[in-house]
Amino acid sequence: MSPRTIFSRQFPSARRGFSLIELMIVIVIISILMALLLPAIGSVRTTLRNTEVRTEISGFEAGITQFVGEFGQEPPSKITLYEDGASWDVQNRTLVRQLWPQFNFDAIHNDSSGNPLTGRDLNGDNDAGDTFILTGDECLLFFLGGPDTITDTATPTDMPVADGFSKNPQDPFASGGTRTGPFQEFGPDRMIDDDGDGAHAYAHKIPASQVPYLYLSSYGGRGYRPADADLDGNGTPDITDVYLTRIDDTSTPENEKVPWKAKTYQIISSGFDGVFGIGGLWSNGDGFTNNTGDTSDDRDNITNFSSGTLE
Image (cartoon, rainbow, N blue to C red):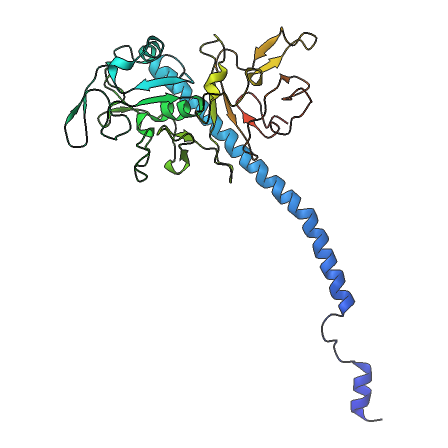
């Protein structure tokens, strides 16, 4: 027997690659690991996004506290702004005067060419005859960001700006000059005009859900108003009044509805599904439900009256 033969018997040649069965086993193992890891990764991402939204809501709360320190009360969650001074009604005059006691309703501004306009041109369209109905999503951005978050919808390049209010006590809506605020940082890329009226709202940070934060005031404890939740501007509230309440006495829920944050305000994010929910009753044990017990739309909502989601 030759030395080469002996050597080859003692040290067989190395195998070349995996067999088909071994390769299939590896693929199965990798698939199992992926099936285990992907939900965990998705859960981590969801938690991180929820935390970001909750942190941002806390920032809004801090901004509202600064706003109160400057103007003496929390922002309303519905107000109608008139560019023409003669159009102001008693209710909205009162809301403005509570914040700016010296507000001049008959202020005259110039258009872009320097020609005087009888009134304020809030959206910069060279016309001082417009009216803006701001509801609960738009009020959050307007009162914390300033009047330049209202723009001319006919000019797509006219980006909204959050630069606060003029320190002129008679004309806080004026542009330029010394400013008060903004009371929170707002990125223009997240300002959305969801009802097409030129007044913008602020979308939450959850991807693929260009839905604005909802802000609702209790008007110092006088009560929440469902009409403030008209997000699309069609005149119909997007949520019901019971959505804002909890049940303290489950034996007689119709008589014992007490709002969360009854003396202050609520801030709500619609969560990943982009839906605020169909309304219902928030109680210590049941959460948000409709009369069939469905909580699917509300479970991922993030608010300033719950530590996490509503689930």
